[in-house]
Amino acid sequence: MDIGAPKFRRRKADRPDEIVKAALAVFSEKGFAAAKLDEIARRAGVSKGAVYLYFETKEEIFRAVVGLAIAPNIAAVKAMAAAHPGPLADLLRGVARHIGGVIEATPLGGVLKMVVGEARNFPEIARVWHDELVSQALGAMAGAIAAAQARGEVKPGDPRIYALQLIAPLLVAVLWRETFVPVGAAPFDLPAVMSQHIETLLCGLLTEGARA
Image (tube, rainbow, N blue to C red):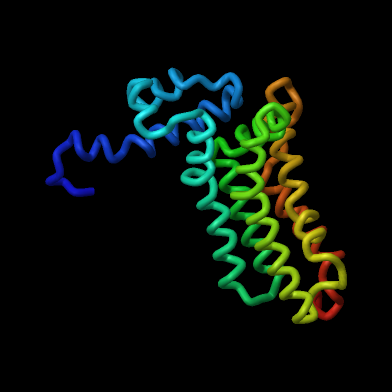
């Protein structure tokens, strides 16, 4: 941070990030339809008019939330896959730890529940979520699995389906936490879910030579 810059100038430059952080929390707690710009502005410490200086609609705020607060985690997964030539088992374990940790430490799970629950009424939020997050993560994992198949580590099969099998239990565990735990269901430890799932999946995914 530039200590010599006027305080008001630093504050103005920080505002979009503050609005995005506030919106992430509000979307997670309230959902999309019930999220109010007044509440987002209050939590960001700005006026409602200041929000409109940066974002014209609630959909634009959601796109910024995805792009600035969530997508970097997917970019990290893609970078892990690109920088890891093998073995696949180590990559999958690392990705599972990373994603499990992110979901434990952020409101991402609540936003996921929001997208699933409100996509029919607000298809644009589902489109943004798919294009910026889901398709990116699925593509990165499918590419890594296809490369492992070429190295003889992974059994024949559709890499994209294998990637879906990899991701699906995490989504179910997150929805369980966000939907049923608040009404009394016993929680699951998300990192433990992913760790056990990866070890189970690898037993069926890897060739005999790769398991040795």
